[in-house]
Image 1 (cartoon, rainbow, N blue to C red):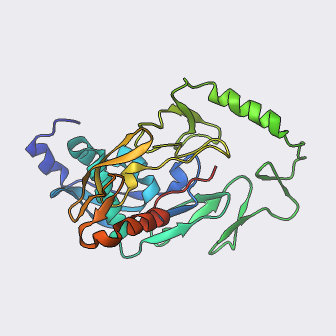
Image 2 (tube, one colour; image 1 turned 120 degrees about the horizontal axis):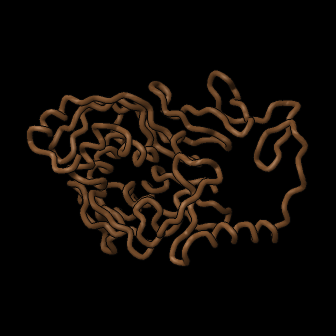
Image 3 (cartoon, one colour; image 1 turned 90 degrees about the horizontal axis):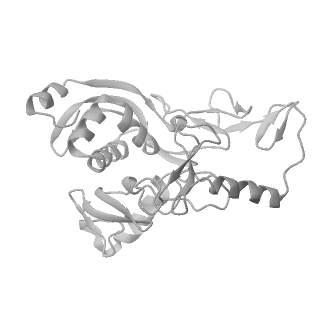
Length: 279
């Protein structure tokens, strides 16, 4: 799809797509996310690529960029960073956007009218059924190794044995790479990632496999960022959206109108909007 002509771009402006994109697309969920119903034209740098009508979460933008025809067209022409920045702005500007807090064992389901909706996994059930706030293990069952089950629960592994098993996982990757969980994969699915340069797992895994593994940063989700790289495990801003400029250390984009407290705003935004992965 690369190498669009102006004619093809004009044709793409009539494209539309509907659907729901939430953390249910991911192998493991985010405890905190921002979701909204987005029903607008996708306008990136003044180019209208088509209509999008979806319930979309910040953490699901990478999946959306790979599966939505309008987003794919925009990425092919302008690149991931600019399209990600545009979608992030649309979510944050949507009238019904919400900061979603998910309970343990939740499978987020962003649907029209309920951006923070979720179902439950691992044998747990929603409570309350109509407007759930928790996932609970029903009476008559018990929680065994994180799963609600009626089956007998075997003795837990010793910490030393767990450490050995974890090292076996790590040994599958070359020394310069880290074993990380996989978006959309099974609970134990993993892949080798260079966390020193990966945009979505910068400085650590976006989906850590182990309890003590460092969590990475999704550089593309930084507020106001238009073009960014991951270098030596740190996000390095190359270009900001209009109205923003890179911080002195180049790690974030700061509002031009509030440079005096821009760093505090950036930190607050990261706490409220960036996915924090349960591991």
